[in-house]
Image 1 (cartoon, one colour):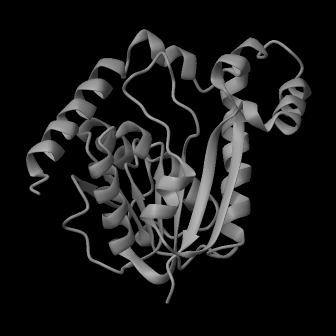
Image 2 (cartoon, one colour):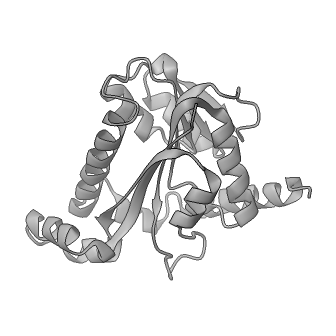
Image 3 (tube, helix red, strand yellow):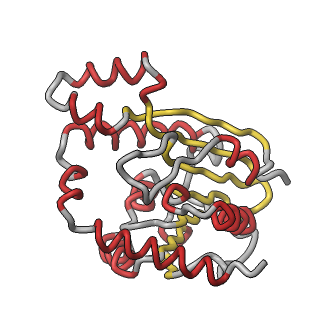
Length: 237
C-alpha cells in the first residue's frame, strides 16, 4: 500500500494544528513559571535521569542521540546539561519555526534535520527518543511507520525512549493515547521498562495553589491519576 499520500495529509494536519495552537491563548496554561508546570518538568527530569542512567549509562559524553520531533530543543539541551556532547546529538522536526528556535537557543554543534527520518543513516544512534510525538499522529499505520523508522535508525544494543499520553483527552481530538500494546508491537526488543508519571493536567492545575507536597503525595498514592508514561526498550544485538 502506498502510504505517501496519507503521510502527506497527516503531516499537513499536524502542521495546521500546531500553527493554530502555537502562540494561542491555550499556550498560557503551559507557561514555564506556573507551579504545576515546574512540578511536571521536575518529574520528567527525574524520570529521564533514572531511565537513562540505567540504560545508556551515567556518562552521556559519547552517546549518539536522535530526538524525533525535537520541537524547540528542550530535551537535547537537557542532555547537554547532563554531559552529552552537542556533536553527538541530532534533532528532527516537521515545523520549521520550532526547528529554527531550537537551533538558535541550543549549543553549537547539534545537527538539525527538517523533515522525516528517511534521509538519516540506519543503525547510527545509541538512543532514539520521541517525546509526545506519537500521540500527535492519529493514523495507526503512520504511527507504525514512524516506529519502524526509529528502530531502523537505532544501533543494535541501543535504546528507544518514549514519553507520551496514557489517556485520551476528550477535549482535544488532535491527540490520541499510546498504549502498551502498541509499544510492544512496534519494538520487539528486550529490557523494557514502563512507568507512569505526572498528574493529569486538569487535576494538577486545581492543586497549583496547594502546598507542593499535596500533588506529590497524590501522584504517589493514586497511579490511575497519572496522565503520562515513559517507556524504554533495547534493540537486541
